[in-house]
Amino acid sequence: MHRLFILFFTFLAIRILATGQEPDKIIINNKEYNLLNNPLEKYFTEHPELHPIYGSENTTKKNGKEKVVFIGSTSNYRGYIATFKIESNILSVVDIRIMNVNSKEHEYISVFKKIFDNRKVVLNYSGILVIPTGKMLEAASFGYSSLHEKYRLISIQQDNVVKEKEIDKDDFIRFKVRQFIDFKKTEEYKTEVKNYYRNWSMDKEWDLSRKNTRRMSKKEIIELKKQYECPPNEDYIDNYLFVVSNLDFIMTDY
Image (cartoon, rainbow, N blue to C red; front, side, top):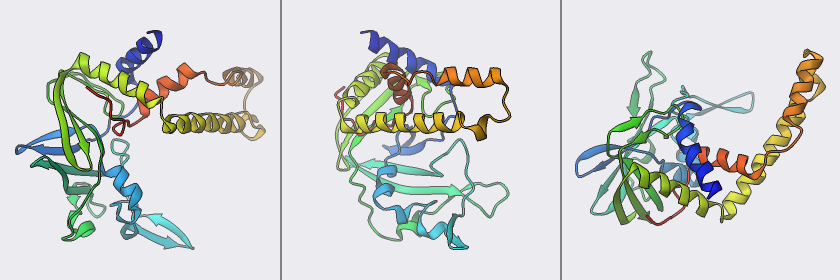
């Protein structure tokens, strides 16, 4: 119960941490909603050459090195905004927009046909879509962590809708906690923990290196060493992963 309380508190606290993200969109019954998942991320991992930003169409080579032609934004780390549609209980992608690099306004323009031409796109997506349907209660500055009055959850298996439900904010928070608990049982969680410790060790090595500390005072170096006296414990890492992880692939019941 103590762990559950920590995660619950973390969910409420993440609104102060970083930059909010521009969401993808989804059309249901001819009405467009914000979508708090990014179903194309897995697709582009499997088909990197089709990525609208990092794919082969948007890279140039200079001195033997690839360079991405991209105007990005801290409010959209993906670099694109996708629009999905659910029709006849099938999830599909119907548009992809990116910033226009040739425009001073950097408005979003569609690149869907450029990427896919007239091909039928099969996402093979499985996960739980999260769609805010009620008014925003608390604005957030981190990812998709704004708190809304109501949500619609839609479970997708291989692009097919298998379940959906409207829930209030309290049930949504309980769902997110249960989903993270299920995540902790997976190999993906173990990998993320290992990655966290590896990155922490690399940060420690650099931060305490002579090159990094040579212009610091003795007092500053002592304070820096205190920060690295003990590696982060499980609760600390769980709180971090709870905030940053995209867990739509964890098919928790609701």
